[in-house]
Image 1 (cartoon, rainbow, N blue to C red):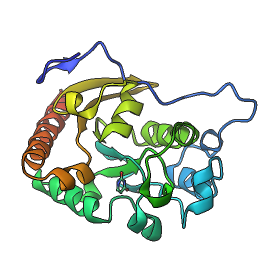
Image 2 (cartoon, rainbow, N blue to C red; image 1 turned 180 degrees about the horizontal axis):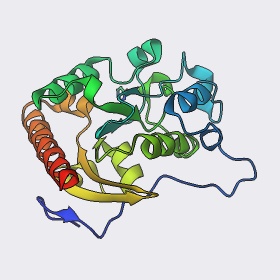
Image 3 (cartoon, rainbow, N blue to C red; image 1 turned 90 degrees about the vertical axis):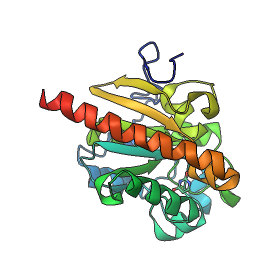
Image 4 (cartoon, rainbow, N blue to C red; image 1 turned 120 degrees about the horizontal axis):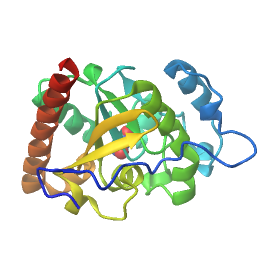
Length: 225
Ligand code: URA
């Protein structure tokens, strides 16, 4: 496990499936190499039971070549209606945190582990996460972010392939290496959980975002040589 302040090089993030041994390929892998085409294919997805209750698929929003990519859990009611991730109360907090480090939503990309709203905002179930994971795979492969921020337990456990909870992992940096993507992954508490717990949790989130800003500057310097 990494100490706070260090990159844990022993835990390459590789939870999401790049390939499937199923006979028919997942539609995410058949949709081509352009993000809008993958989004169009996802809009018709009926691979899990969440399709029955959704208004629309909430694929993701933001820069198709963003250096910074956020992964949340799944759409809530507002997101399901609008077709955009993080537009409800938790989304307002996420937007504030992004703006707090001098960026806007247009500078980043925002996605979720599951692209359809779980009924009554329940947790996404393992079969739903598994069915949806290749869409997130393709988003990561095509956007190729340098920094990934996982918001809460579901995204963190999926991308770090860990059972460890967010409380232990937040505030640390992990190397995420997979299929040509080499990014730094920083887990932080989900904005909905921050809204529920207030004070200390909000301060921790702000601190995590300051760290995100530092890591972005560092990877930018590395890229410039
Ligand atoms: N919570 C999430 O995890 N994602 C959203 O898009 C909205 C709320």
